[in-house]
Length: 332
Image 1 (cartoon, rainbow, N blue to C red):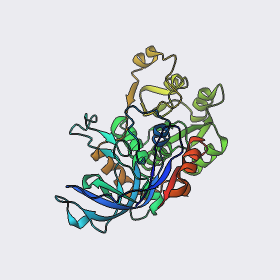
Image 2: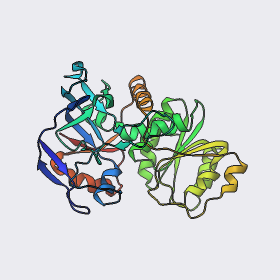
Image 3: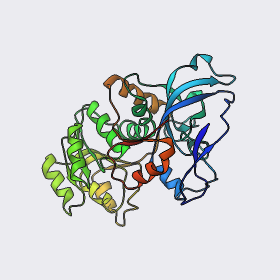
Image 4: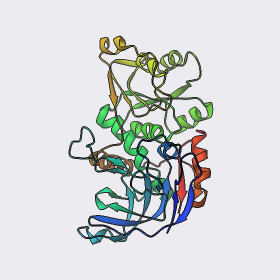
């Protein structure tokens, strides 16, 4: 089979011919139809993850058809259209992942390949209303957004939500999921065209975080502070998110792409009873809840661009440029 591999850090990926995977006990082999990129893939290529062992086939998101199963796996999976849950071995505690937890694509061979061997426990039926490319865009970012909103922040209908950095996959899913749950959603972005596109997807409004007074603008436009804030950037702008949060509100965050905040006013948090909630990925229960919401609300992931597998390097550079609105997908 053909597969894309990272063979050296800070070097272009390589398209290789590799042996087809064989299903171990409890596993299935999936013939992938599409795979999606995440910033994690760029970070691995840049050598920014600990314990990188090369070569490795990256990729955490995928959708395809089951073509074989190993012993101890139900043969009824064969021929079924599936999406892949990239959270491997979460563990028994729904509150947090266990010591064996890992994300598909490092160290386990990922989805930038024509086939993958994966535990059947990590398979879910492909939502019937989605194309292959849309289905492949869903798993990692959708799971992350769903857990942040519903498991960690305990979002309720009628609440006001702020989603920062709209345009990335998880942020867009947070917008779609919160709207489907009956929340009012506002967004931030550094690009005016992304704010406009977010409003077309249901955001009530938004502001440009490059403006020095963006938080004041936002509070005026929204008519007050927010019950829930979903953030993936961190950085110095994180301190303003506290000002944008109601007393008793919740800030859930799952990234630090802008770095750690240099100044964090703890007094504002404890005096106003604000909950600051770290989160990452999600449990099998979270994944089931996420896919159920997508199916019941007929939600459609936003796909920015589709590249062939042979152009994975170009796709990675497109993601790195941060100009995308939605997920970047590989078609197999």
